[in-house]
Image (cartoon, helix red, strand yellow):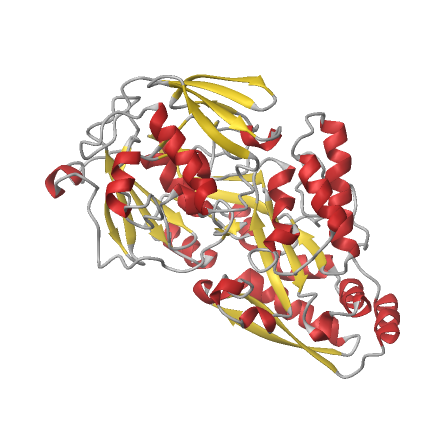
Length: 525
């Protein structure tokens, strides 16, 4: 959730993390070996944020795009238009019973730097360190431990059934396997290694990293699996989508996501040698309200704000009408998606005024914080205009990434106490558990910035991850979204969409069903 740890750093970029000191060289490899392929086939892509960690236990969603290239997982997402997974480091994996999953590793996967072969011992270390250092951990849920049967076989043991494991934990961030020997040598206690991976096991290694300029991946000479398409992948951080579009048109990058308000123009007038695709997004964008702030404690004030917000007007302004109206926190196509929200998209100004009268509030001034991004600042400004129609003055605070993503986190200071309204977004995964687990009471002060508390919500959230029947699961997750909206703390805006473009003279792009790039599947032209 945009990016936190396997529980605390995922909703998005938080802060730069360990200092990079100008650049780093592939772990355990001499520089000459790390850059041997620099003159070969090169793929240039854009990252929407500067990656701040490459430790799977503390992953951010954007960082996973790189982790997919430099580490191995038991399974991985398939590319294409449908959600699915396939084997990666596992030769076989099976659900023995609701709480036991047996895997058998492929032989011959090596870690760089002389750290040996990837074994079931490394799987155990990797998965268990996530729950050791990051509790609660929504990705792994009730993971208890991993039993080792031999060097290549093990059993994942759960305390309770956990259906999301197959769609979230194994093929994504916390599923990446690191070398126990290398991590223990680098950190002593097996803790966070941040931006300095001590060993690699994927088709690529991290050869160089110049902060705010580029990240360079080159082929891993120790890799014995299928050969990747490119000798080098150069990842360039460009935060603003408009800037990324200009960089693409200038030839600086070959693949990028584009803004929704540019979509219509690119459809009618695409750049030369370019393919444009649009895939349904797993993103959720909403206006959140801090229920603990004195000005927002009264539910009537929050309800007034909900009903004063006209969602289609916001989407017209921010996304040129190219984004669909959200019905909740769960995107279309995912179990539990609601057909409609409790508050109609257009709202109702008269009803909003009635709620404000019930609260006995007048001359109200509030703040709204948002990222320094064209779309999010437009959303904030549009909400500002809409709330003025019911007599609420709204001050807009535009924040850079490092500042914004610490606003509601108690461990980062006391700014959460002053937080009022926020333009929030969250990149989800293809299971409703991931879309809702951030709003339990244990996440207050971490990623539950609305400080929403509901015992019923917590109970249903725990139940939903154990139910395998899709119809029963859908009922649970629809009620969870009802509880969120009925609190008055959420005004759901849009799931967005994921348009992207790539240069057909350079690459055949490959993405997940939501448009997220899978660089290992990109093919040179």
